[in-house]
Length: 289
Ligand SMILES: Nc1ncnc2c1ncn2[C@@H]1O[C@H](COP(=O)(O)OP(=O)(O)OP(=O)(O)O)[C@@H](O)[C@H]1O
Image (cartoon, rainbow, N blue to C red):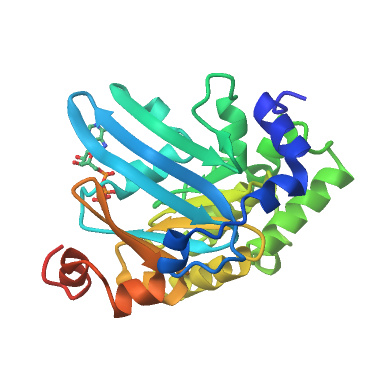
């Protein structure tokens, strides 16, 4: 099957033992509020990123935990989206962009030359700021990638997957009678849930969300936030948000970036209630940003 790269094969072979070997007990993890039971899904080591001559990320080190919501916050231009895009190699598509360092997903270096980038993006899905359904029916929006990747066959198997993904994104009841309607005919909030359904249809491990609610009204925002809390039972979620209340409401962990540096990273409560760094405190109390 086309998506079965070395990466996929390794993941399969590693099975649960890989997860278990990632149970961490280091002092620094405990210091940042991670329990010894938590496992690392994404490991970032000495990550540097350059757009041409300009360095946009400076030596980022970060462990992102399995089935948790991690929020990335910081002022405009600090590198949040750039960092997020590194985790599924979206920056490969940006001319003059150079990445140095290590990002492991379940212990596999996603920048390794032998890795199939399509497989990385299947394991690490992405939802963007503006809902971007394909100009196709609701059904086809979900079915397109699973059919392309041979995950399901056309017919009953595919129908079941479409239903499961739409249910997973809390959209099924609203669209079950109009699956042939264009995805673009839905409301903004429904379109964003359709995009989330599309992301989960290929059964990723990690979902990256770049300001997924910034284009939505408060009611749609609340639905997406509740959905994220549901989704973290099965997926690791990393979200860029400008909305600190949102980060405080939904995030288990929060990372504060400034000028391409990771200033502080800890469990969300500590970061918002008792930040260690003055810069973090200044930012969350609105002194700059
Ligand atoms: N394609 C690109 N080419 C050159 N520079 C870029 C590119 N994308 C981002 N940058 C620069 O990299 C830095 C980080 O940008 P990035 O978009 O990651 O920040 P951000 O924290 O997500 O900002 P915002 O909150 O405004 O979206 C900025 O200085 C930005 O101008």
